[in-house]
Image (cartoon, rainbow, N blue to C red; front, top):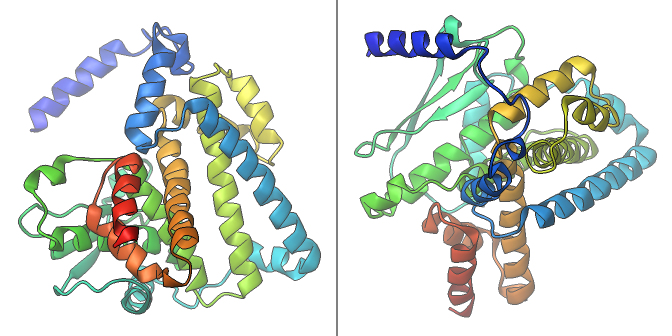
Length: 332
């Protein structure tokens, strides 16, 4: 393995500086068409890129208005949200608290699931996210691992909602619940980012309500998380579909308080990973859309726990497939 990586390093080093496009995919031949395909494949959504862009525009406007009204009504929420102290101030405490909450609010996993929290090697700290869930082996899903980043730039005493995203009721719970249904092995190679990462964001938003925060602070943090995701997703479309330059992206981001340094980091990240932010953001909206449709159709018969049971039992799939199955589930 190591000689292969050395060869890869040599090959990439030789290619350095030969790239002809330092912008979005739309600057490449058929790049715009490819981006449309990539967005559909990653998000699992059948919405066109234009419709996604319009949705994000509406959501940004809605979240800004909600945040403004909340801060006007409760000015202290803004100041308290700047320096939140979590009662569950270690990843392990967070995991235990969330596991306890999930047992009440979500369908039960009958198997005994274990989870070990490990720290990434110091050589990976600069290139890794604050935490990630390591998908377990196919034949032993009951042993799970969440890796956390011990870098000084991440404050792990505030990792509660990150653990909700990666652990309970996020990826760990989502993965184990589906595996317990003994799906066809073929299902385990099907990946729909919008389903998986959309649920991760859904879980993160749930986490704010379970962190024992003041309800107005929790609501403000939820809105801020969703607004930030929408801004990133809109920049993704702007760069790869409409051809925004770095300068145009910086101008867009500066309206929301992003510095030049942050704008550069975001631009480079989006150029490197087209449609990545869309799977989180659009995936979340598709899940919420399904839940609202079920709620409207079933009325008093609607149960959140039953909806979660339905959604998580299906496993990764395009949202059109899930919606089709949901029609039959609602009739039942």
